[in-house]
Structure formats: C-alpha cells, structure tokens
Image 1 (spheres, rainbow, N blue to C red):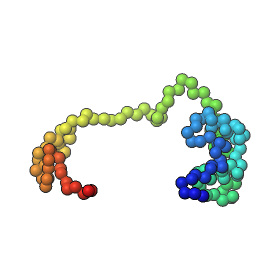
Image 2: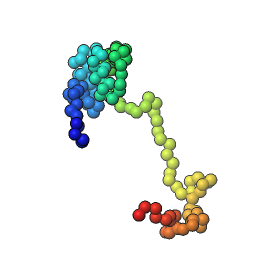
Image 3: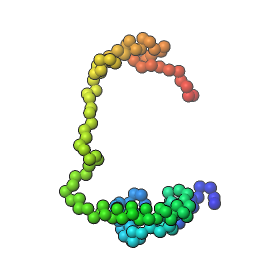
Image 4: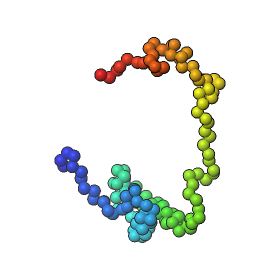
Length: 133
C-alpha cells in the first residue's frame, strides 16, 4: 500500500462510533438482539487493536452480551426530574484567596531579597543565557 494512503475500514458503518449518543448505542444493541457472537467480539477487538484468540472470543461473547443487557436495563430507568451530577455526594472546592502574604512560612513580597541571590536579573525576573539559537 502506498505511503500516506489509508486502508479502508472494513467495519465502517457496522457499529456506532465512540462519539455517538446512548440512543444510538441502545438502537444498535436492540438491532443485534443483545447477543454477541464470537465474530462480533473479534470485530470489536480488531477495532480496538487488541489481539485475541478464538478461545478468548468465545469466553468474552457471553460477558459482552451481559454487559449489553445491563446497558439496556439502564435505558429503561425513568430519570425525568433527576439532576445531572458528577459525584454521589455533594462536593465543593476549597479555594483560598490569592493573596501575596497568605502563608506565613513562605510569605511573599520578598522579590528584592530573592533577586539579590540571582547571578543575573532584569526587571525583577531571573535571566538565563540563551540556549537555543
């Protein structure tokens, strides 16, 4: 195959891509009848670039069927009136004010003292030699 030319995807259009919504995934699940065979497991593994044996595919097929069944059960739950959340417990970020002398150990406002230790300083900043020409 010529360099820079992409090989056509043999599985294109057979499954929803990762950006599709849950409704499309549920529709695909119902279309395939919620049972996954070894050919589908191999197809998914190829799309994920995972090498699996026939024995692995046979072992994974019922597990994937169970997962799809659970996804279908989640789709049946009535979530009207439920607020979206990012965690099961209420969280709030502990923020502090950005004040120069907020921490008594590190302090602040001592730029002149720090610059006195610098081998070379300009305009209150450390200056270093140019490394890239």
